[in-house]
Length: 453
Ligand SMILES: C[S@@+](CC[C@H](N)C(=O)[O-])C[C@H]1O[C@@H](n2cnc3c(N)ncnc32)[C@H](O)[C@@H]1O
Image (tube, rainbow, N blue to C red; front, side, top):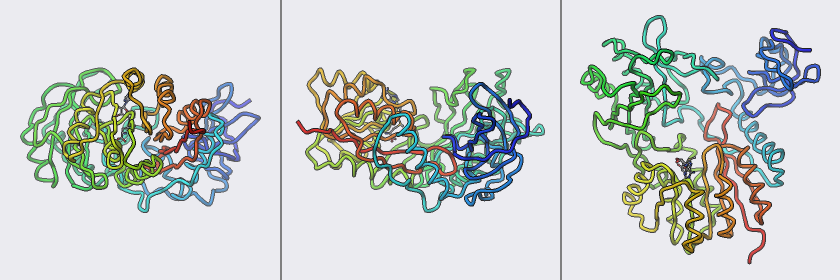
């Protein structure tokens, strides 16, 4: 029987969904952090439970041809990226396989899963960063948490963040140090500065800086704004975000604008969007165009259709769809996002959209009661996937096509099974790499009604 601290040799035969290598020792599945499929490794057991064990790599006995030396100096420590040691080609293959496995095992979906579409340059792609603030050797530091912990890994830069983002974080760090501004301590719930959140408009270069604070004001604000203005070309907006709760949720509900404009602007393709501190906006501006173009292709619109875009956020997909549809309903639960979506429609002069506020699983049944039907339904839910009530309503509307955008292959598989059992067929699934160097993958599924009425 394996036990904690055992040193074992493992032949890694598969990759788990979060990127750990998996092998078997004494009949038990062992998940080895940092190991790749095809490798033989020496590992130290960290945890043993009834059905599996967890181990960490101590030595690579025979490496995979896909193993690379991580470019990031914090790889293995920082919880942000889990695949820095895998070649980019290997990452894309891993993601394709992960989607195929989920669809087959969880959903028993028999469909074509295309190869994952990757980036030409998979670095510096993120337009949003959330840096926790802490201390190292009594000095303020910013960084990222280790995997499954709140231990801060101090960093000097992040290779997947937009460069303006780190520059903003550095300015805030220097200001904290210079004016001895207190740093939040989550153990005793004291101190002021919790996180620095940055958003960058990739096409416009506009920057928003949000200081998440355990309070409603900061000392030496004038000096902070002066330093940000001086060092950050493109600075458009600075907010204080009030989060006085003892919680792991990063941002609170209240935002106080202390500099510049309430929004920054960015484009996806030709369409213009305003972004506020809390609104959801896809983090990879290059791949989001690839993703939305796939949505358009699979929606197959001619200009005649009534379309529903459920879980529409600030109306990004809605406005794309509207260019080729008669009317698009966007449905979203977050009030501010609906307000932004309506603004974005105005900003782009788009009139054939209507935004409905509420939980999509409640709004869609009400639409049916009002006699509203859709020819095409697009859904883009959070990781937990769609509520059954929403899928039930979607099937009742009897659209000829659905497009499912998903950031979680497991819930995608579950929901596709629901639809397959009720007269729909998954034509194909296209994974898109929105998050290089992490284990996450986005998918677009094309779904068709099996029989026309
Ligand atoms: C993955 S995001 C997609 C947003 C948008 N389609 C985009 O590409 O930017 C999911 C969105 O669903 C919203 N949401 C979460 N639960 C919801 C629900 N039950 N009904 C409607 N919207 C919901 C979230 O606020 C978020 O804006």
